[in-house]
Image (cartoon, rainbow, N blue to C red; front, side, top):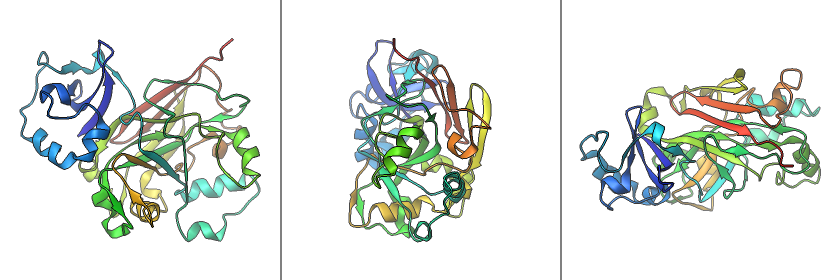
Amino acid sequence: MKFVTFQTPSSRQSAGWLQGHDLVIDMNAVSRGFLPGSIQEFLTEHERYLSYIHEMNLFEEGDMGVYRLSEVRLSSPLPRPVSIRDFYAFEEHVKTARQKRGLDVISEWYQFPVFYFTNHLAVKGPEEKIEVPPGCQALDYELEIACVIGKEGRDIPASEAEEYIFGYCIMNDWSARDLQREEMKVGLGPAKGKDFATSLGPYLVSKEELHPYKTGDRYDLKMTAAVNGKVISKGNLKDIYYPFSEMIERASSGVTLYPGEVIGSGTVGTGCILELGEEVHRYLRPGDEVELTIEGLGLLKNKIAAKSR
């Protein structure tokens, strides 16, 4: 299933799922209040709620709480995640990004997956404008996939991590490269180079729907990024060095994970301008439109906002 958060024609924020390609089902409305009004609330008891949904009949246009996709505006499926941990899990990206700075991959990278916490209160959804942070002259996108935790757990072994994942979505970890470069010299961060925006969406896709793409502990999902309609990044999730099971094992070590926490993969190989180089594409400017596409997960589009006068 594809779960969504959306604005109704009356500007009310609701949550639900897609039925087919063009119907959006308001879960709270069609269940007459039994199902919650947000994806976050849904995740806390999703097994019970899913059983209820599976017993429902298909809906038709005109039914209460049923909208055409063209009638609503999609938001991030999780507008305010509990947290966002972003990992650094694709070897090609790590190698190339460090080579750009004249550095080799340090041996510790191969010993355990590493992550940083980003600002879970600065999440953007599809079609939302992204503002250039103050002082930034090198705005970049990052083509990533994220999993969303659906079950509370602590010290989760990789062999059991799959049962703690509810689903997946596209993630764009926007980066102010010049700000990031300066602050990382201090040995702490990233902070202001990252905390202004993270895009998630357009849907939260249940892991069951991605089963046909599964190969071992990875997924064979094509990933692309386009700027102003031109594809400049191409990768595949199956090439990830650390699968999500190992990321979850690391994240939950000595710490409890809760439903609604987001875990990002880090950038796929070739998945950002920093890695490609400005000879391939300049850094982003106001008016640019960035489209991230991942097989099975849809398309996440954002435009860089014009600078205010």
